[in-house]
Length: 131
Image 1 (cartoon, rainbow, N blue to C red):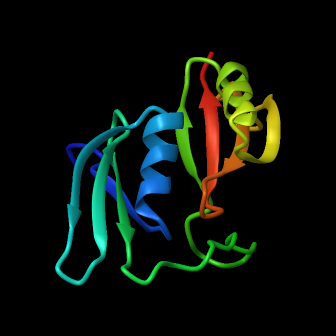
Image 2 (cartoon, rainbow, N blue to C red; image 1 turned 180 degrees about the vertical axis):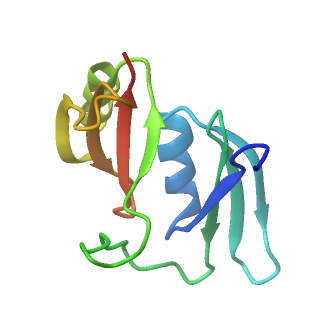
């Protein structure tokens, strides 16, 4: 059995824009940011129970596409908040791309309320709260 969840890595098109989104809007904390010899950048953002590793290639990256049903892959990243409604309202006011407005969770045994939006590269983000 692992000690804990460590991190998930993802590729983004613009490091500054991504750090602004995840740290400035979602509240993650920048743990490390480094520029590599080839011009690419890597950063680790503390999400409170694991980290998000962000990799930005020197030449940028294309916008993310949703994983189709029937194809393996990561569907979304979920962050737990005290209030989905308050967090959603703040992010909507900031102009974040909305996918699905707040609603009661289907998996009520695990979560109470959820909402979905997209980060600057189109990666799906789930906002969640527990009772």
